[in-house]
Image (tube, rainbow, N blue to C red; front, side, top):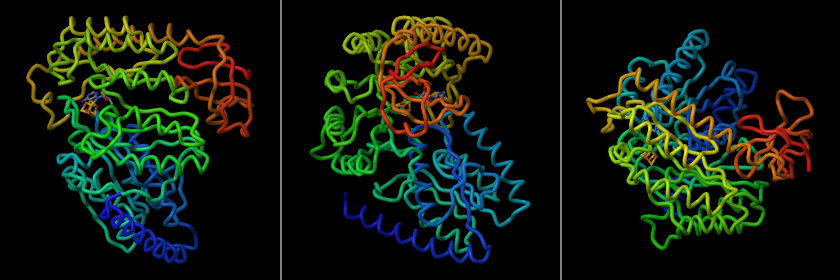
Length: 470
Ligand code: 5AD
Ligand code: SF4
């Protein structure tokens, strides 16, 4: 860790103590504990960030609530990858505003990707002035400071930075699950796909030093974590720009070697730089989960070029089939986008052709959403809504049919499941996750949570299994 990062961490830990003192006084005045709730939108990165935000809140002395209804402090950790995420947030803000009118002492905060967009930041400041705190992705580590200012009565703390100098380690984290955890290995993205806002709101790619990552994983394992998910927008370029750093496959191997770690996942891989070394590493290490998320986006070489994806339809198919061939028990999932500017019915046929050839185990299908500031947004050949809808339905049908066929292939097998929770709708049942990322429900009790147990996959019901202890 850099000296400046260590100092930045110490400073923030100091603000947590200040917040704790201020909270004690507030508690005495109110005669009860103060409560907080973190609402998370978006991807695994945001989920991990929310665990950090929650850790800071709890360390300061807040009681954390699932529900925002009765919270003294509501913090929204936002996403802006597609417009529907933004609309969802604005809906929530309308609700929380009416609550704040009744209870002016409550505090509202917004952080994450959305305010990192200049136009959204302006809109929030102008039309949502009841919001007390706004900060972005680059200054998330400074949340303890903002919290302490908020608790000493300051309002309208609106701070956005356009890049990060620090990677602040070792602030408190409150994990959602005691037995599994995400671990950031890098931040930001340098790929600039022409539709994507991520490089604009999360900044340039920065890798964490492997020694820091492995020390964090060791600490997690010591505290009972069995499964880690290494997180980055493009994990295959891990280590670029760092002196003497190791490759991503090497990082995976060293993660597997940490005592106590039984499963390793990672997210997300860009097809353009997925190496043979990575395929070999997955194949040779049982602890690396049999699941690969390999975003396709489009099957048309013309569209892929305009998206700046830097692979062709044929290159993608070759790669996917090579992986399928090398590791037959691996489940492959993907992201597909429909309605990118200029996309024709013939381009969609190409996408469908790839789906039919690769046969994904599951696929997330998105309608292209215009993001301000990206090159694709200013194109004049935006696709009419009716064609998008038609294409979306066509793609979805093939995705569902092929995924159904793929999911069935595990039926009758006995596979290890990490028990994650009690089943909420069936008494006496628990829910486990297989190495291939599928879900299985089977008879069990809450004492099994956090254990890895063999389960017979009796019956495939679409995207999940009903099973029994083997
Ligand atoms: N519109 C629709 N989907 C998008 N994604 C990224 N940007 C956009 C956009 N502008 C999708 C991609 C990516 C996933 C995380 O979100 O498919 O892989
Ligand atoms: Fe966005 Fe492309 Fe980076 Fe993924 S790789 S975050 S789609 S720019």
